Length: 316
Length: 199
Image 1 (tube, rainbow over the protein chains, first blue to last red):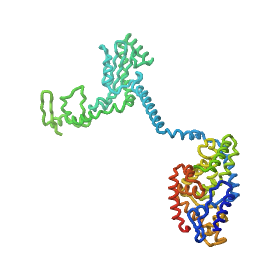
Image 2 (image 1 turned 180 degrees about the vertical axis):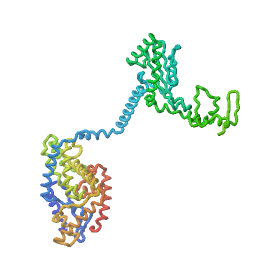
Image 3 (image 1 turned 120 degrees about the vertical axis):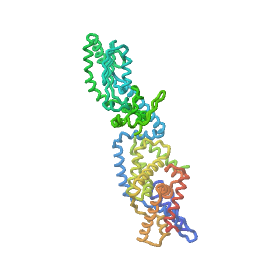
Image 4 (image 1 turned 30 degrees about the vertical axis):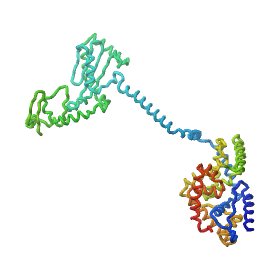
């Protein structure tokens, strides 16, 4: 028991003089009173590690190194993003609403940018008004031809000079492949230049100037102008390839219904009795080339006619 | 609930911190001298490497010095400094989980507690006693390093540094129940590892 008291006193004295700081309270090792010997517990073993202390000279070196690091920290310039990183902790608290707002802003900005870009693509000045669908453009030209006008009509180009001074030039060109592919009238590449001095679509000064000059020249010498404009066919033919590249790919594609109809009706194409000039008859180029009149005659096995229809059965 | 000594200590620290915040940079040395031993002891017991412990202790003081303007006194400086040191140490341990080796301090076997413990474990004297103490030290550090980082931290702070459960919970930013649970689990593992020495 005396040993325990002495140990306890030594422990208290030792810890208070060892560190000189607010070190934790040292609990003495547990003693077994029966045989007056220390009972080794896990706590005692762990407390043994408290005596792993560095020597005094270690602290001198430690203080020197710490002072050097402290001075370096004072002198060193912090990176520019340090204040931002400090505020990032506040921002992270509202990360979800801020992220949603950012996504919404980006979506709205993209939508506005798309809307601003789309009319510029589809609209534009008269020189940029490129037609990709010939029937639509010919309708426009026809609607503007209010009175019988001297129309120079060619297979590949159309020029209409309207008497009231407006000049409408519709230049159309069929691509060579269009002649072979009857199924795709919509694939006809075309260019329509609409120069209208009074319209809102050709607002450029040069267009108005050209239109005014043409109107004046036509009033003075119509024959010369007609011959002159007739020569523009070669020029238009040179323009067409450049226009083709600007056509919309989606508009050049035939709709799925057209392709399906072409496939179903391909076999009865020889029955051209149902051919309507306004309705394009879908037929493949390969089929037409390989079909002679003699073969057509031999393959027709049966035909019948009704009130409104003609049915021809063909065997291949 | 903090003890009166702790509260008085926290007030003293807060006064020093305010002096540093007002521009008296030299006042920070008072805090350094006051806490360097304890911070080093905690970091050393977590890493079992004295060179790493020295570097990490210095880094903790530098971080505290750089951030002292943001210290508002919501917790005691002691808790705040411990948190910085332990977070730095945990980050270091996670980065160097694979590369770890012992670099142990010399153990002072002249201390009464050490002497008494070694006397209870062995009858050796003189140089053999020193060797036995060294072997025990290595076994203890080896067993500590087998614990997970969180469990090792709790054991170090409670058994070696003498912090209360509440203080450990504040330092580790968890509940007191979590601290108790981790401490219980860690002790079970250590008892299994050090069964040979327990009598």
